[in-house]
Image 1 (tube, one colour):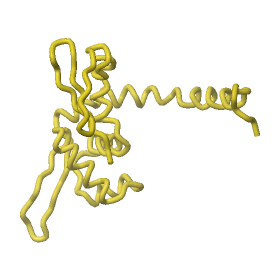
Image 2 (cartoon, helix red, strand yellow):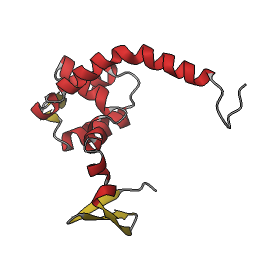
Image 3 (spheres, helix red, strand yellow):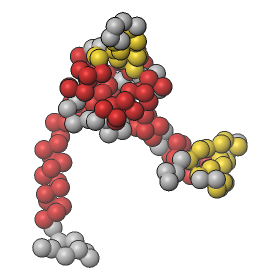
Length: 150
């Protein structure tokens, strides 16, 4: 069963509800206050959300099948779920055309488009991925306490 946490503000304290259990926590322990970008990360950076938003921002309006082709590894079920969530979050607009056969198109909203500078900054930061890979190799090559080397 998936745990869903809800936070109820009470002055400088919060009640945290998780699977029916309620716990009182202080504002310092509230994850949103500890890391104010956490809710943004939850919305924008799930596994398939970023490629969907990137595609719609870079290439414009798409039909479902075209999105599925452009993001080759995504399953239809997951694409449907992510598009619904993005529509609910106001980042994607779904337009239904009552034609024969029916046509549905998805496009990024102005709110979704406002993430473009963030995506551009992350794309620029991707130049550091070689450095990250070097750091990983160096880390993996050194002896670790409590870890056996092959």
